[in-house]
Length: 78
Image (tube, rainbow, N blue to C red; front, side, top):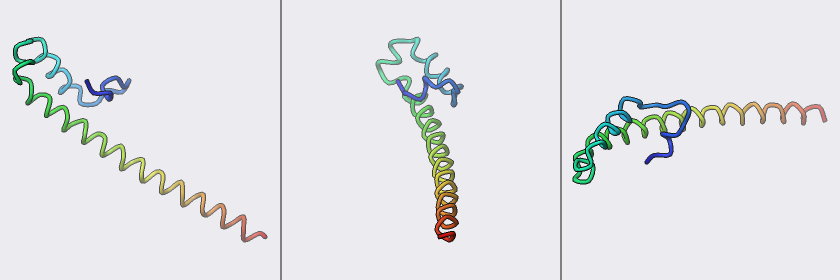
C-alpha cells in the first residue's frame, strides 16, 4: 500500500475508506474491480504531495534568502 497512508495526519481519508471497502471483496480486488478507487486515491495523494513540495520549496527559498541576508550583514561589518 502507499507509505503516505501510515502518516498520523491522514489526507484523502474518504478515498482510503472507499478502497478499503472495495478490498473487502477479494474477487473485485483481484479482477481489477477496485481500479477506479485506487486511481482516485493516487490522484488525491499526488495532489497532496505536489502541494507539500510546493510549500517546502517556498519555505526553503525564504530560509535561503534570510541566510544570505545574514551573511551579507556579517560581511559588511568586516
